[in-house]
Image (cartoon, rainbow, N blue to C red; front, side):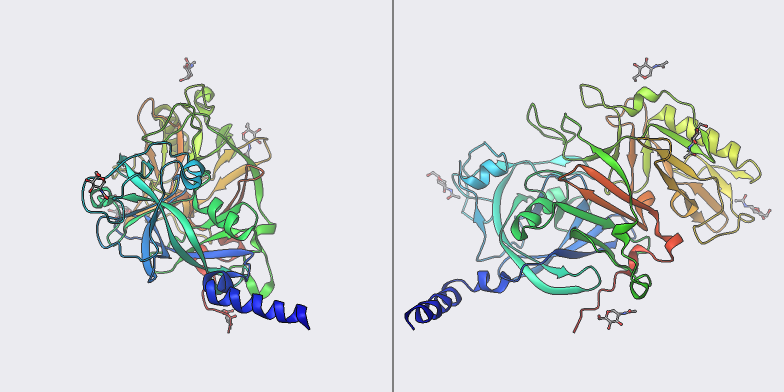
Length: 438
Ligand SMILES: *[C@@H]1O[C@H](CO)[C@@H](O)[C@H](O)[C@H]1NC(C)=O
Ligand SMILES: *[C@@H]1O[C@H](CO)[C@@H](O)[C@H](O)[C@H]1NC(C)=O
Ligand SMILES: *[C@@H]1O[C@H](CO)[C@@H](O)[C@H](O)[C@H]1NC(C)=O
Ligand SMILES: *[C@@H]1O[C@H](CO)[C@@H](O)[C@H](O)[C@H]1NC(C)=O
Ligand SMILES: *[C@@H]1O[C@H](CO)[C@@H](O)[C@H](O)[C@H]1NC(C)=O
């Protein structure tokens, strides 16, 4: 009698004081975030809900970004906003050791005795200082096939950006969603909040009319029409180690910080099975953190160091010598008359480009759908861009080459799983069934 009375009392106490805990006591195994492609900026835009009352917040997805940042200067209204006080647990988790005051009326982004970080607009490479803070973030859970119930993280850490920092981001966007390997990146915070695997996956849509998807947590990941046939895409990935660049690639960083971006070990590039000849030492990361290959969602097309780029277009045009070339259309350096090229399930039938990885039989194969860009009715260009001499990173694999590929990042084992084009599996990244289960 007595113990069940206590139990009841305990339950009602929980419900009374802590509705947010009661609501999220359901523990999701994974979360799902719709991501659209903005036609004019070619950025990938996620829609997250934040604040109290909750509002939708449009964010440019930054795969290697350190954390979530939003503009707190304009239109930030929330009763649950809390700045991180100097030397608090939040500041140390975020490695924000600075401590500062703000000399105007207190408001989100401007409070005394708070620690701060440097939000970066990685599209324009502009940075500013901003208060570290926490607020409610809510997102849909998933079983891998459909979105499920909405869950929230009451104290999600983020940094306050400023209105000027939004310049260069897609229209309507008010911040950036950093999916990088930092303790306060979105993947780490979500997996810590719900105790699921430190894994996430991105699947960017090539269409500006249908959403792609980011999954936080492990698979299964089902995309239509595979779903009725019960094909879990997380089961058919090829794996390669993720490489830690020991030197930060952010615009502002402290000595000793590692990069939060995702690097992989490309060892050579083949076109139609033949190696492209260039100086391979550009493919390794040196002591200064220079060189190597990373993956980015904030550049629309893969960018390569000049000598690699020149070797690539020379080899590619040789392999496609039967097709008439036309004057290149910026930003591309190699274009063809597409009148007689034709098409296949995986795009224009052009020589395949392989990024060969840790072993000769492990490679990321790129077909026409990810290599060729239709710039006009009869002009098709190789969707790679010259990155100049001495760039920080020799190869930056950009958005166009990622579309309709599923990429899973495992932070615990530092491993990337990739699918190559899903078009072979008769699906696309726009095929997640966003219809909720009843
Ligand atoms: C911070 O403290 C200073 C000095 O006490 C004060 O002038 C200022 O208004 C305070 N700012 C905020 C945002 O509370
Ligand atoms: C790449 O080229 C090398 C050298 O010709 C060859 O041994 C290897 O099999 C090729 N790999 C792929 C994936 O085409
Ligand atoms: C290859 O590139 C590395 C790094 O940029 C450079 O130090 C080296 O001299 C280059 N080797 C050749 C043969 O060009
Ligand atoms: C492409 O080829 C077609 C047919 O040969 C020709 O009519 C057209 O002008 C060419 N386009 C370009 C951009 O060269
Ligand atoms: C999408 O999911 C909903 C809810 O489970 C289901 O009713 C519907 O049939 C699914 N759509 C397709 C095309 O399978």
